[in-house]
Image (tube, rainbow, N blue to C red):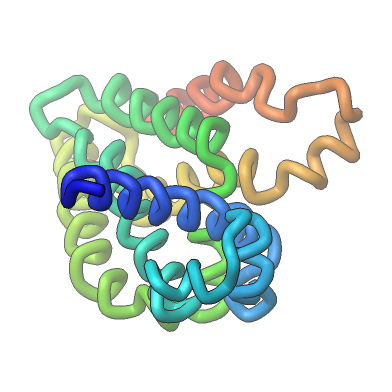
Length: 202
């Protein structure tokens, strides 16, 4: 087998393991998940899995690293030069789309936060905090200029996170309430855009 073929197979195996682990971690949380469960989900032996990742921590860390860039992309796109209401509503739409398209990733993130973010504390205190503060300043500048209603920018961002990610993190509860044949996010975009537009309207 050539080095290129071996490298391709190794890359594919790592992705298989990460995909399997995402399902296990999003359902069981970090503490509840085991390497044995991940190996079974990946259809690999535990020794084979450990050839690619030397611990459960290593798999979890890789998943979080892969998640964060995609998860924060919508907030990074908030454009100070754009129309404020349109920019914020576009952010709401992107966050809702991500919650619906990547529910396991959302639950992985939520599980980490609910347990005190032990593997993400450094990132949250540095990169994430700096990004949120920078975008909060953009929102504060819009409000100061009278382009949107006065609003606490940090709480506005937190509210967007809470209302959009709810559709991933509490999917089971909503399906029980609305019925198994109803997609919980049906109608959510129109409602949330109207809600935040109303909050921001001058």
